[in-house]
Image 1 (tube, rainbow, N blue to C red):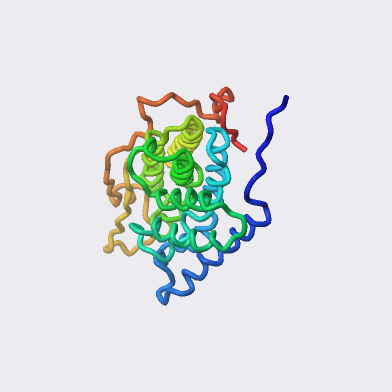
Image 2 (image 1 turned 30 degrees about the vertical axis):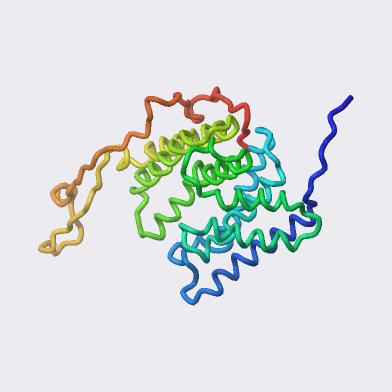
Length: 286
């Protein structure tokens, strides 16, 4: 006798309507602010960016919920609504405010059990919880883990490099910035508790370590831990400086080299030199 598959309580059409509501709400939050939104100084924290983050969290959280046995519909809907108030409320209260907006919307939907609405709103309200994830329900845990994991890996690296450009940093600062992603990834790996989330964290952290190594191999100033500054001599009228003159006009500021290798972690092989990397049995590179 086969296992009976439980039909989803949320149809695809209904979920699409929810997605449209969340996107419209985020867009209105920015448009309604005379200053251009709470996070206006970081353009990628627009309604478009926030909605993209939400989509990423839905994907990761659904994967975790499916493999760990959580209620998928609760996780999927709470992931969709978890940051709905991010652009209009202060960071400290955006989760609680988001739960309020979520409840108001879900109560307008037909045929949703009150218990389902309560579970979704609880996960939204608790998604910023900083305590042990074992204290939360499996559904809330799946959401929090997904929210953490979206900020690391290749995606986290791209976002912090975008921040570099906005702050007018040069590419020689990239090692320092990528190290921040590595640190965040290591912290994420320590905090998540499910096997699926740990597997995703391991894979994403490995990608950032590879990128850091590639960057150092191509930008010597990073591996030397030095910034080379040219200080032209204003007394020289001849613009055609000889090699000897250049040597006398360079000052080198040496900083502390940041080692991206954590001796407590498994050693990962760079894919440029070896194609026998350990393969994550849970998450593919697709």
